[in-house]
Amino acid sequence: MGTNPVTTAIARHPLVWGVGWSVVFGVALAVAVTVDAPALLDWALILGLVLPSTVATVAVLSATPRAHFEAMSSVFSHFFVRYLALVVGVVAWSASVVVGAAISQTIQLAAEGREREIVGIGFDVMAVVVPTVAAVLWAAFVLRCAWFLARVRGWAEIPLADATPTHLLATRPALRRVVVGLAHPALFAVSGLVVAIAVPFAGEGLELTI
Image (cartoon, rainbow, N blue to C red; front, top):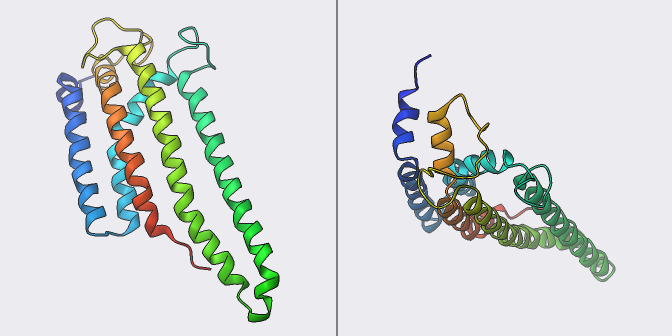
């Protein structure tokens, strides 16, 4: 079976390709936010920016057994579950605040028939608060995973000796080289933090109308 020429080319300098990818999407995202582009475009650029390093990080940390750390079956699953739990908790808390505010004001405004307006304003506030808090939690998640990446595979572009499990893509050395190279702690941390900063701005276009 022949080697994919694209994979071979990227495998020579995966970190350089990863940085180039992030720079292109980062610049495009900055322009989109500056010109007030549609929110869907912002979110697409955010996803594209973080996708390569995140997929590589998930692959490396998911394959890392808990023998390396006192964690669950994999480092990634341990922190990802915590992150989701925190986000769900924030959403639930925000929803309870909105509902509580709506109920407390409904009696006062019932005569004017403005109950739907109260709920609409509350959910508009949620559309701003929830992405902001989720972005902060995502930043913490990114930094934590970047720290574990540094322990697992080090800071070199192509680590010669690291703790990355040998069974990870063992039969596809070129692809393994790409994945380990893209799962660089600095690349993942920087791209992830850029996303954390951009998410609240992208969330501004998601106001709900009720």
